[in-house]
Structures are given as structure tokens and as C-alpha cells.
Amino acid sequence: MPAISRDEVAHLARLSRLALSDAELDQFAGQLDSILSHVRTISEVAAADVPATASPDPEVNVTRPDVVAPGLTPDQALAAAPAVEEQRFMVPQILGEGE
Amino acid sequence: MSGELTTSTAAELAQRIHAREVSSVEVTQAHLDRIAEVDGEINAFLHVAGERALEAAAAVDAALAAGAAPASPLAGVPLALKDVFTTTDMPTTCASKILEGWMSPYDATLTGKLRAAGIPILGKTNMVEFAMGSSTENSAYGPTRNPWDTTRIPGGSGGGSAAALASHQAPLAIGTDTGGSIRQPAAVTATVGTKPTYGTVSRYGLVACASSLDQGGPCGRTVLDTALLHEVIAGYDPRDSTSRNVPVPPVVEAARRGAEGDLRGVKVGVVKELHSDSYQSGVLASFDAAVAQLKELGAEVVEVSCPHFEYGLPSYYLVMPSEVSSNLARFDAMRYGLRVGDDGTHSAEQVMAMTRAAGFGPEVKRRIMIGTYALSAGYYDAYYGQALKVRTLIARDFDAAYEQVDVLVSPTSPFTPWKLGEKVDDPLAMYLSDLCTLPTNLAGHPAMSVPSGLSEDDGLPVGLQIMAPALADDRLYRVGAAYEAARGPIGVAPVA
Image 1 (tube, chains in turn yellow, brown):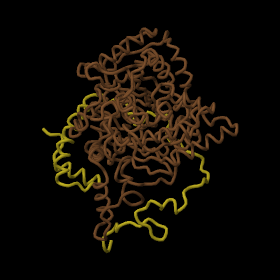
Image 2 (tube, rainbow over the protein chains, first blue to last red):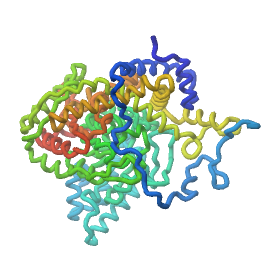
Image 3 (cartoon, rainbow over the protein chains, first blue to last red):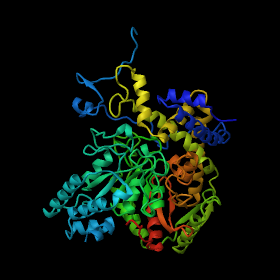
Image 4 (cartoon, rainbow over the protein chains, first blue to last red):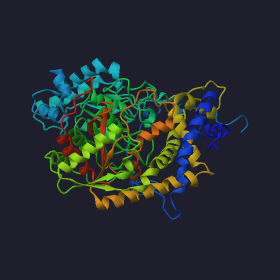
């Protein structure tokens, strides 16, 4: 049984905000199936009482003193923006009419 | 003259520059000439910053002429920087179309340390797009070629940095290692590379691939050069919340001590699970010869078992894409980088999806989707959750092994460099080349690749991997330098 179907890959592409072509979906479906078939061997390895390690870093919740420090100027922050208007990032329409 | 400058070690160049026998400008110019001569064939650099490098070199020369002490032990020695660290005066692309021409408004901490150390930056090196992969074929700007055989891959993701070293375009380079991206390129180009302990070289301004695994590190042609660079770039950085506030291990001292060739009292473990009949026979022969040499140097060698390393690959290829899918969400076409389809007929969400489809290459798309899958509600526990548990088991295997030995060794890669194109349509086959390097990233430990000669079956480079416990990076350098001195010279790549 395949680990993942082409329809599921198409769904993943939508969740991932990747507007893939049909040819890409055909190619990725087989490749993702072979990768996921390999990695799912992991499901039998660890017993329930083994703790998870999300990071090798022993430090957690590191904070810095809340002091004012120089940051980027608006011009620096906007310098690489695809579109700018009135010192703001200009983006395509997010909400539909009347929303 | 210039030939000799490009074949010298960084340590020799530094000594001569600081004694004012040769200027940093001459050394930097010799490398720029070399880049102009051979990089058309190798494609190690995505961007060459000749003018800025010469300015930085001239500043070092002027300071030395005025009687100032060198800003660092490597002041004046030029370097190639992987194009994944931000730089205000050069584009940062991560070899992706989505960041084509992007100029960062700030320098990475590592970039700043190089500048402060008086190290001229020759340019930014080619890599696998967003550092995902082991061949440097999946670069939006074309593959890098291996100087040992230009029909073969230079390793990855830091193929550009390793190839620049092997073809004498730079005496020093910077890489990053998420699953072996410093060590495997070093192995297949007969150069040296270290992945330091996680958290000991700042990730601030290192464009994130997988944040719990990513680690910048030094690359060189010798163990001592690599150690000198390690000390320049390591250290606590309050701007990186995962930075370790601990002293930098004495890696230069360890490299000098190691070069004396005495490993008596050092216990070396050969990892049984990283020595398989499925590896290339020439790689195993080279590795076995290296282990014999460690014994001759006085080391005590024992076999150790790390039973969960077998699951390192599946654990890594769930953890890593999961973090990638989250980190790369920032490339949304809104604030910087590529934007496609913004013609008034598409919503922001459509523009985002069109831009990401156009701007990311196939391996990045695959990993984002695998990560999205592993993190989705129905699969989270079975995939991502399990992968994190296996990560614990791998770390426990390491802990048990280091109760018996000081360092572990294995081949760096199961194979010598393969032909360009050979594995490009079979991602899983490509992933298998990372088998030996992944466990250290999952555990956050340091590891190094040192050349162990040329394989007897195909004449291509093989690397010896040395691993050590967290914060014991100096052990890598002691053992690596001792082995390097005993091994003797390997020769130079045909394009070198």
C-alpha cells in the first residue's frame, strides 16, 4: 500500500502554499511515497516512555534584558520589499469583496 | 609567486603576512586571479567581491605597517563564505531563485566576526538550495563541480566552499552543517571540515534550514587551519537564543598538540553500525587503514555499538523537513524576495503559492511537503513525535559510547563522489549518503571530516569522520591533527 496518494500530495501542496503543476504532482507523488515509506519504519522504534528531544540545546526560554537597542530604519526594512506604499509593505488583496 | 600563495596553508600565509614578507593584498589578489582562472569550470562562487576583499586586505596591511598587532591569528588571510550567511555588501541567495539578488539589511554575527578578525571575504559560495541535499546540483545557479573529477559532485550542501578549497581558490571557507553539509563535502574533495557543538557558533544571520540542527563551522585544507578559523567564529552571541554561554574549547592548542603524533591514552571507538558491507569497498579499506594508523599513534581502539543509529536517517528526514516547512513559511512574497503574479487578479494567498512554486526548486518543495505531512494533525504523533523520541535514543547511544571512549570514528560518507545527475531523480538514494553524519546533528555533538586518502577502487577522495561529546570539540582536533600528520600528503586535485 502506498504511504501517500497523489490526491494527498495535492492537498499537502495546497497546505504548503505551493502552486504545483500537474507534472510536478505526478513526479512528487512517487518520490514522496518512497521517502515516507522509508521514514515510517520509525513508528515501531521508541517505547511510549521515551521522552522527546526537540532540540539538543539544554537552555530553554532564553530571554534578553528588555532594553531599547537600535534596529533597522524604515528605509532599510523596506529596501528589499517587492512593493512599498507610504512607508509600508504593499501586498496583494488579502480579503475578498465585502469581507 | 601567485601559485605558491594559493597552495600555501592559511597558517603559513598568516605568518608571512604578519611578518610583512607578503601583503594581504598580494595574497587576496592571487586568490582572485585563481578564481578568474578556474571558477568558470568549477562554479564554486555565486558572487565574487574582489574590490571589497582587496579593500579589507589593504586595511590589514595598513594596520600592520602602522605597527598594530594583527586583529586575529588569521588577519589578512582571505576566505570564501557560504551564501547562507547574511552580508550587507553582497547578495545572500541561499542558491535559491526566491532570494535572487537579495541584499540583507544586516550582517550575520559570523560575518561580523570575520570582518573584525581582518579576514577578507572573497565572495559567497554555491550550495544546495537552502542547504538541503548532498550534491550541490539543486542550486538555482547551476551545479558546482568536484575539482578531483569535474564530472562528479562536490558534496553538499556546502559543495562550493569545499570545491573552492580543493581547487585553491580560497585557503579558508565557511560552511554550515545540518546533516553533514560541512563534513560530506570535505570528505569527497579531500579537505577538512568541522561541525562544531550545536550552539557554539552563532546562528544569527544564518538563514535557517532546520533550526535545531543547523550549525555553522570552519573548513580548511589542514586541521590546523580549520582550528584557527574555528576559534575566530566560535563564541557566545546574545542575539542567538540557542547560543551556549561557555568557553570556546582550545581547538588550536589541541591541533598543535595532536600534530606531535602521540595519541597514547586516547580511546577511540569504531561505531559498528557505521561500518557496513553496503558501503563502497574502497571507502571501507581507507577507513580501516586510518584506524590502523590511529593504533600506531598509540590510541586504544575498541568497537562500540550504537544500535539506534540505524534509525538516524528516518528520524532526521522527519525532524529536518518539519523544521524546514515551518522556517521556510517566511518566504511569502510579501516583505522581501521574489513576488510572482501580483497583477491585480490574484489574492495574496494565490501570489504566495505562485511565488513559492516559481521560486523554490524541487528538493525544497519536497521537504516542505514532507514536513507539512509529518506535522499535520493525523500524523504528528506517528511521525514527528516518534522522530523526536528516536532522537533521544540516539543521544543515549552516544552517551553510553562516550562512557567507554573519548572519540568515535566512522567513514564520513559511505561512497566517494558520484557522477553529476546520477541520483538527482532518486531523493531517497541521495539521502542515504548522509547515513554516517546525521546522528551527530540529532545529538548536537561536534564532528570533523579529515581526508583519509584516495579510494583504491576509483582513486577518489575518502573522509575519516571523528566525533566527540558536546563541547569537547578540541578532541576532534587532537586526533585529527595526529592522524593528518601520520597520513602524510594526499596530492592535489587535477583542477588545483
